[in-house]
Image 1 (cartoon, helix red, strand yellow):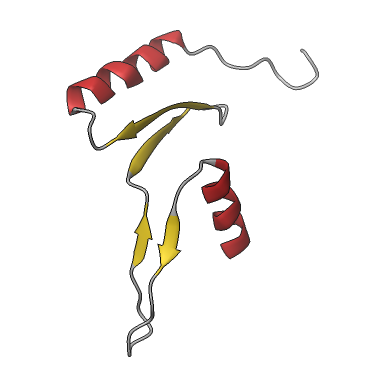
Image 2 (cartoon, rainbow, N blue to C red):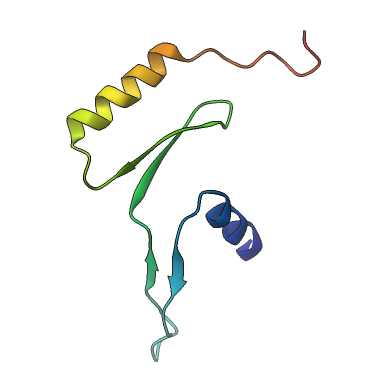
Length: 77
């Protein structure tokens, strides 16, 4: 929903601004240009801007993958 999108943008501190609609009702959205790494448990792990090279991003993602340990199941079991 629009409210969920706004909440996610706020949580990740992402800038988002919809431009004016054209005659067809289309519009352009200006936004932050970032890639976020979130682990399988939904935990934020890293953020990559356009200044990072593909090799740097790959090295970081691989490091997070290698270090990943799942959260224990709910209820401590």
